[in-house]
Image (cartoon, rainbow, N blue to C red):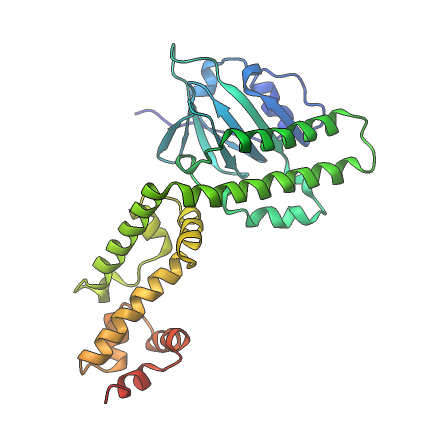
Length: 305
């Protein structure tokens, strides 16, 4: 049995050394060119985790594996990794051209005591899987690459008291553009995204029509995302753009539909219906029902009499 190795890269300087690059001009931020990476068999024999953020745009024959998904970057896409995420690099020998593109590395310490240190966690795409990467148009890529060049130029220049603020502003601009482009991608990739939406509706209908809801309980966002083969963050972002609701909102919507059906067509008590729908505590069901309908379950039932 092969034992999977996990290598943790703690610093940007260490990353540069491992990939055969010169020492970084700044220890906490760096822009590197994939074409400058030195090949190494060790790189492809283990999984990796870094203690810093990375934003990459890549092309070439190299595959990146994140979780159980593998993605080919021949077409050129953008992906985002937060500190602690595990990934694996898989090289295809003798295929395609040498990988090209760039990678922005930002250590959390560079963001310390700035609003971005907290705000960066709101960009949900750092939790997306690689197979949910961002496809850029030529114009979008030019915009992003221009920002990267500004960052690179700034930290290579003489560092002064304005340098960090300028670089932070550029990083925020890059992340905001990426958010805009992801929103565009949700809308323009209609066939794939609406297929996910249709499958979500089928899964929720199947779950709430089950005769075993008492034992199955309420579906979680995590379990629904796994069934759809997407990450929870990606599913949430997609649904908010297409429907205006979160994944949890969709679950609650189907739940309330089923509750209304039981309240209007059966003589089961509110407590019995709560248990039948998978609630451990009937009061939680009543509270959710009133929040969503402005009526208690009993008031809703009486409205039919």
